[in-house]
Image 1 (cartoon, rainbow, N blue to C red):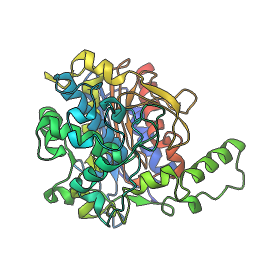
Image 2 (cartoon, helix red, strand yellow):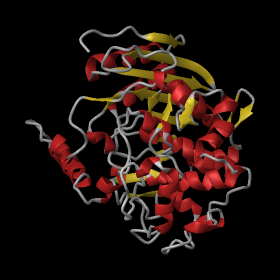
Image 3 (cartoon, helix red, strand yellow):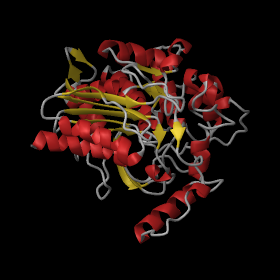
Image 4 (cartoon, rainbow, N blue to C red):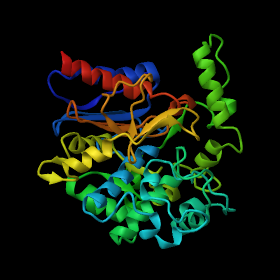
Length: 406
């Protein structure tokens, strides 16, 4: 973008540095279209949007939605925690107690918690899948019922990049008695908080959805050529990413479930309408900030209680911290949420929890500071975003902290 776009929205007095950081992302990182929102103790203090929703110059509006990829996992995990808080799900009970057909191929005693902690050993599907299968909920559920774990459940953790959504989502759907996972999300989360958020976006809302855009070739080893001044650290990261995307690797096979031929293009109506609760939530920064703002203050905002305080603490509590068998890096996870990893360039508070998405989107709660944060964008960041926090979101978080500390 040759000229900086007009920045729309508001920031509370004292939080002008967030607006400056938001504008700097367009100048320094080539942002195309984006939004950032922050709540403090449940009150909105930042609500910004700017840029283009597509390459044809359609403006990013106040109500623009965008695919947030794995940021969706936080929404899906929240639904499971809501049902557990109601006493309808026991995380230590076998999945088969809620989903009897799951008890096959060595999964008979697999507990629900392993679905949320990525310890189930089900990041890939071995069955032959026809083109478009990932858009067919019933087909993917059947495939996961037949799938044997690729490691002993509980023995290690590895990112269930796409299967997480069907695994956790099917338990939620069955326990809630919902026809579609998105129906329960709407009933339990979206409507009570007045959010703009979908998993399975109706065609009537597609005109508001921004197109995802890339500045480089699609994900793959060819996109990771070494830079002339590559540091040893950058080389090590590049080699890890290349190993991840080697055909046949767990990462390649796992992430591939959300791509053609199994899925549809990420800007297509078919992709937007389907339900992949690990990968195709469509929302905006304002909704993410409000949702996580409720969790940052113990599970309640404006008289609406999503979770009890005890359930919020359970949602945020570390469950695993170890090398990830799929992403080939150290990761920390709670029951469904990502936690900051010491040593990574992550500006979130140490007790923060939430989820990021491929390309850069992020939603999280910081109970220590009372922050709910949401960042959405349509320019997909590079492959290194699988290994390190996105610098655009990180600069925004740092500016929020500077404003609070000044």
